[in-house]
Image (cartoon, rainbow, N blue to C red; front, side, top):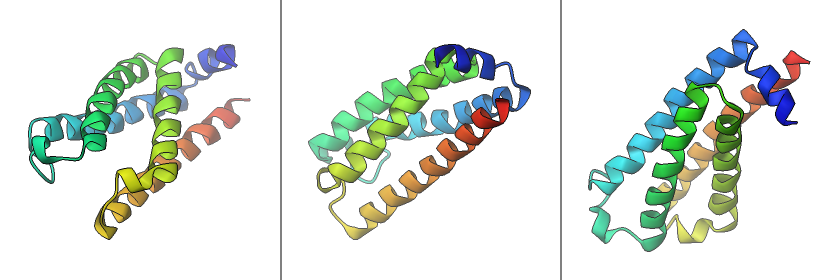
Length: 130
């Protein structure tokens, strides 16, 4: 499977898409950084612990993922998939720890929908390579 990822990054469409993903993930990282700096919904010190931990972890993961995707590396793709899968896990199984209002739930559902689209395009490009 890892060899397949190496071959896929040589595909021009996948290479372009990985760079687009890098920009999208960079935006997510900037959102987490903005939250850490107090530009979020509330001052960072007043946010729930789960949001604080999530901002720190995903801020770091997003930065690493952006570097890997921009360089079109296998580990960048693995980081991307790990971030998406982990966010689906925490925002579905443990949503009560992250969403306290219906607006927050709608925001999370929008995020998950966007990530599902990004993931679908990735797998379509992956399958087209074969």
